[in-house]
Length: 509
Image (cartoon, rainbow, N blue to C red; front, side):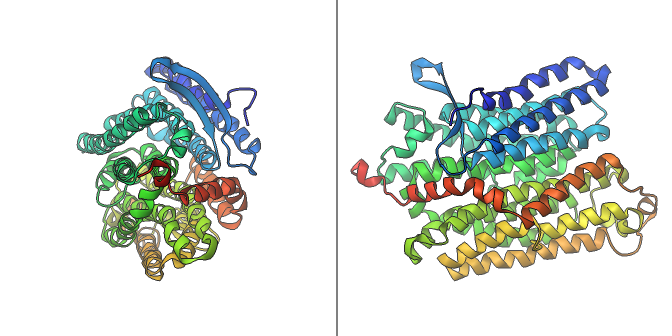
């Protein structure tokens, strides 16, 4: 489907150009900068809803497509389009775009215009990543996205912000260099940068494996997978609340999206041959990192490790399919894995974003992230306590919340592939409950621990609005996941059919 007006270009460039307007407001007019940022992010969110309402769920074809020549010498095009994988992630991005602006309304007092502009630019670039159909365009958006995040952590971060920013930048940049080599190779062989054409391009097994490892280097750092995960806790601890929210809610999803858009369809045979590697790393992430989360003293670090553990479900759901194909007739249950991974991505976006916002609320009042500095918060902040407990319960996979749906679907698919995969994945649910509930017990419940907690004021209308909206989203996806699953169903089926067909035969390799 091609829309009459370039909605994807509008969604990408509206926040980026709007950021220039916010910058023009200057430091002296901080309140104007905040209002402008809210208006631009709000308009972007409203326009993104048209993607959802105008999307045809019966087809796996790209919709709302745009194609303009960009660098004709190298056959590079400004090519955009979305399918059932992209739309939910774009909606998640625009949804949090608004909430991050509202969340930083009072807590950010220094260089407000630059802070808001950074987030608007980041929002536009992330939408670009999710809608690019030209590989080089994807790479440009993929790399450019690092810059505003680098600035947000480096300028508004904590005491060790320089160390965290450099580590974050080096890890993600080094990973993506290998992907760039893979993209250039594919261009030289095929003569095009079109990702969709690459999906059909035949490749010998050896080539596929190298390409797969190149993509793995880039996307595993983004998710992040074990053992390249160490930048994430550092980045989260030092980042301001808004930075942590965007990092956890959106940026980590780009890794999962990369596997769906590049690794699986371009190198299906290598994905099948090396699925044990991804499943192994995923299970290490979900089990080992769960134990690491248990011993954390810093709330942000605990949630960061929790994110790594929960994103392990995403990679497990995506690569479990090959085992399902082997063990069942017609691959029944394979779609559960991919759909579960997608639901998990969206759900984790809501829940981790909400948990970081909860920590932000406490930090703004007490200026500490340490668990030991709290206790008995429920006595002085009952409304906050109710919402925080909901989010931490959702994080541990409480039925009725979005956290349950994705993990349950992935575990069901894992059972079809291998009992022990499912067993290991199920163990992490117990660990997730352990560290989530232990945090709740020490921070929210019990006796009032000190004067700081005794003097706390409950959440104001602005904080209640932000957390309340996310609470509704968590419960809505938990109780009624059908619209989300229906949105991606045709795209999932198409992907699963595609990865079952070997490319080696065509390549003669």
